[in-house]
Image 1 (spheres, rainbow, N blue to C red):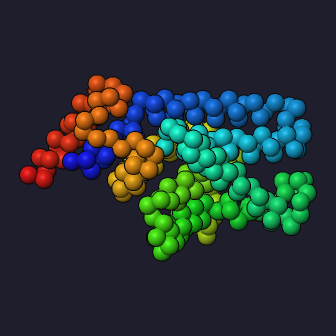
Image 2 (cartoon, helix red, strand yellow; image 1 turned 180 degrees about the horizontal axis):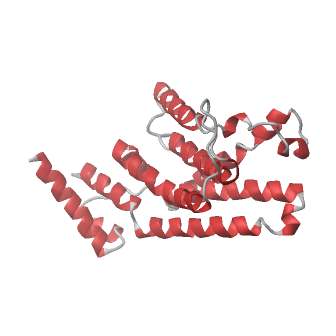
Length: 243
């Protein structure tokens, strides 16, 4: 029964009011940040333009992962910071391709740098998952492939409004409409949370992040009466299917 309660908890957290509000807040942040970066004093300075753009990638990565896990204890903030690092570090491949530490050279490349190939995202995420299984780190670090997937995808989607998505070896798409970028960025954390629930990863993370729900304390831990009723309905349907 406790296992079923954990599954119900994981599903409820995926579609909680807080996650929906946070997703809306993320979409507003995207709009505001992109408009601020159009200010002349930023656009006319390469360093300000690069730092503000990369910083926005980092904040979106952190915000997205915070939606997935919630912020309940100190270690959660470390994960959020790591997600922001993943979302920002991709841009170092500009300097790699330029073979120079010159910002001007990094901003004026003849082609897209390697980590901006969107095909790499599922390849790297799945490879990391298999490596973790090989090293028997599946439970304690089960979040890592998903964190990398969300952080890198959010970066690529945002870059896509200017350059399109580079789907090697098939070429690149047309630049993404701005509304589509905002919609994907805002919905990506919840979509990934749903897939994580369906694959069982969400249940492991529910226990890992200290929100394991027991039958006795269920009403006090769910935020609304509606969530409590939904949890009971899920359990009832589960028991009915087993019968």
